[in-house]
Image (cartoon, rainbow, N blue to C red; front, side):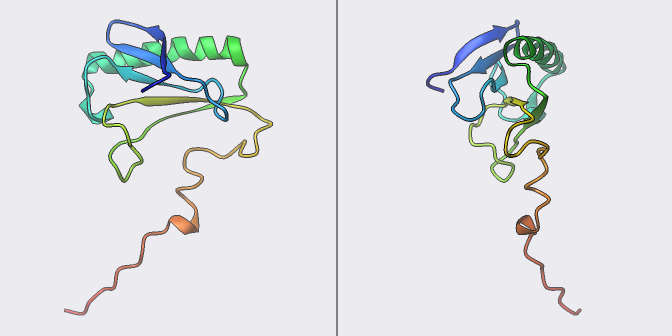
Length: 123
């Protein structure tokens, strides 16, 4: 994606960041090889992702001193994946944010996200 910079990398994955107006310090860990979703990663890519996540956290802790993190994958269109290449979001969180304390599932658990009830038809 345009504007992204490789900040950290190992033999199988890269940690990419781009200038952000709202989510300062956030980035994504992506496998070097094309993998469409998280479910397509090899065991080696999982280990490399975990190693890079630890490195990224240490770097972000030094540079931004966040109060917490959100870390997660979107998979498939319904899951919010808009780029068809697996990527792990790493988002530093800060106590003075308006949405501080709201985790990944906050909006998913909202009554506004309830699926339409399906009618049960008699047999």
